[in-house]
Image 1 (spheres, rainbow over the protein chains, first blue to last red):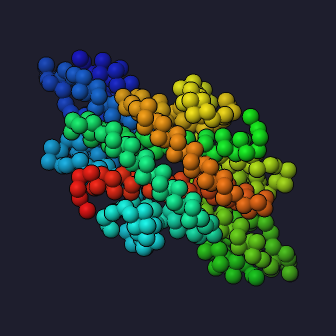
Image 2 (tube, one colour):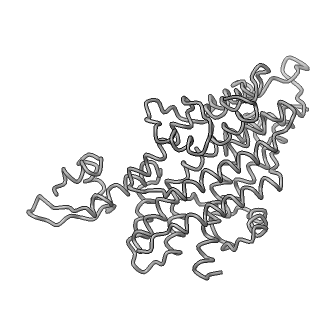
Image 3 (cartoon, rainbow over the protein chains, first blue to last red):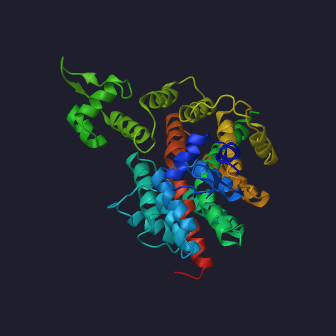
Length: 200
Length: 200
């Protein structure tokens, strides 16, 4: 297909496709003349992935490039790719004291790399609660840990066996599912609150 | 205490306290002269709450004002206050087709107001997945719904009985707990992935 059809099927403008091509986020088509190239379904799939990362995923061009690099690198194993995706989508948080966060994940029996940037993320989130004098009860923390582990197990159960499918699943599952989970929690809170107040 | 001690205990500068006072986010102290006022522990607590909302909570001044208004309004019941908090922290999403999101929450037996902005939020998150050709299996969706409901029940179980404590709990629990949950999910994914790959 030509670039115009690629753009239409990817849901973007031709100018946007050209921009992604220049930025190396979408691989070039096969040249059919000095000014024209042909694209195939793999380009459509990549274009949609890029759009998801930059749009709802909220990644910058540089972050998207790092994530796509992990998908494209045949030497990366799944675990390394997962790490790249997670790091690409996190702010750097050097120098955060992660001791409380480490204790918490150890209490759940999770084995986490001590330099994992998510530990720093968790530490900062817990510190913000602490700064606001907000204490999570041990039961509530236990509920959060159990819920997170249950979710992670169900997600890993669904991991496709083919490598590039699996990486796509990890990338989109990490980034695009977060807003789904946050929306569901807020809706569940509304439901439970209404139920207890005898409304609805 | 004087404004300098209030600032110190609240972890901000005096200029920041003055800014919050001007914006009406913190109530005035009791004037002891034409240029000096005295503050008490309730001002420290409010200052920390404002800092949490504007900092880690990521709210704008206008959003924080709406949330604090819900806390301060003695006529608002808990459910109305919860609605105000949730709406103050959401982008407006008029015109979104919420039919798929409605079906999903109905499948879980949740009774949600059809105009709830969180339904639009969920609809947009699901649409982004759909645009990226990413399908969540029915089992995984079930896991997400169950996890969200379990979390909401545990959270509502911990609701303080005193009204202003309860509202503070709802506000901070809604806004500041989200990053905790997202960090825990990512850490649980690392743990489960490492476990399955026999690492660690």
